[in-house]
Image 1 (cartoon, rainbow, N blue to C red):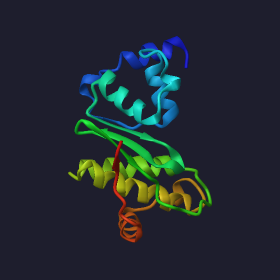
Image 2: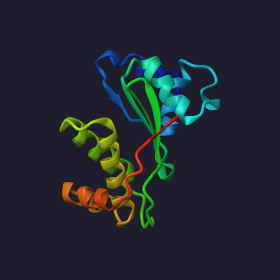
Image 3: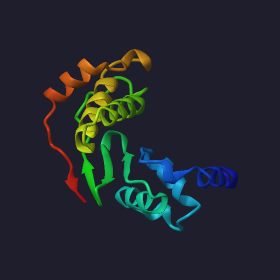
Image 4: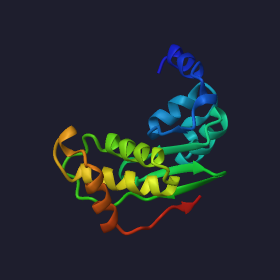
Length: 155
């Protein structure tokens, strides 16, 4: 990212944002202009730092096959990814984000939205293609029902 990108990110109306879901590289980029040493922060530290620095109440840093870290309600939790035999990872992040947003908008608590999002991502990597591999609500529900509900562990 260049200096202009940092300026653009800093100019966003973060006070109007309730949820941000960057991957690890995006989280580091958002913090690079504001916090020295963001490259040395753990992913969990990134979630906490984003929540504080941006003033966003829910931050989920996605970590691909390692799952995600979520900062909400004043704490940070690690959610391991569902085990999946990957066929094609194209669109897994999009599937995660779509299911997460849909569940939150539907009134689900953050942990339930993360569970659905992880199930959607697991479904997507098991199928070839991008939009062709996007699960619908029924597939997400079936995938979540078949997954071991491990929940998050407080960091």
